Image 1 (cartoon, rainbow, N blue to C red):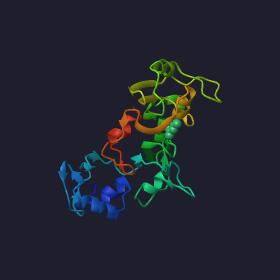
Image 2 (cartoon, protein in one colour):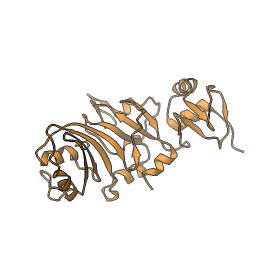
Image 3 (tube, helix red, strand yellow):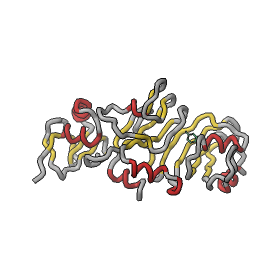
Image 4 (spheres, rainbow, N blue to C red):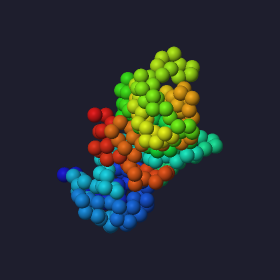
Length: 235
Ligand code: URA
């Protein structure tokens, strides 16, 4: 029969939180076992029990999967001499194998996925899977409503030979739009708006595929994905 495990150990294994950070998280009442808040880090958890952190079930130990709300000024790299990286924001002991599944520019904010599961990341980033990415975009100049058709038809970007894939543009106000693209060329969103003579002043990624950025995460905060969220991206 599989053994019962201490709650802090199970949380730490499943999420990569250090044992002491897991204990603080548990004492703060952020962790439930089978739907009930448990504040005792030494609580013995049955193998089949469901453990959740901030209402999200934590995946079984194995690969690690996180969503992070990237602030400006932080880069999507595993290490860097002069800038803080998204991995620096993770308060976990073992960062071996962790990488970003889909980078954002240094000045872009929002949803970044981090994992040590290369197959999973590949499903999200490989061009042939055409995983949609949704952005909130602030523009310097009011947008002509005719741009919606231009984005849907595709456009040729500077230094590119082929048209972009159809993209969905939703105009919220003349200078505030939502754009969904299903490819990830270098600086793609900024270059698309440059191609129509506009300029992006702020860019925020709201969703990747069916997975939305958790609104409860402040800039710089992260949390593990639940099993259901992990599956959403490879369904
Ligand atoms: N497109 C951009 O131009 N920048 C990003 O960070 C993401 C998409």
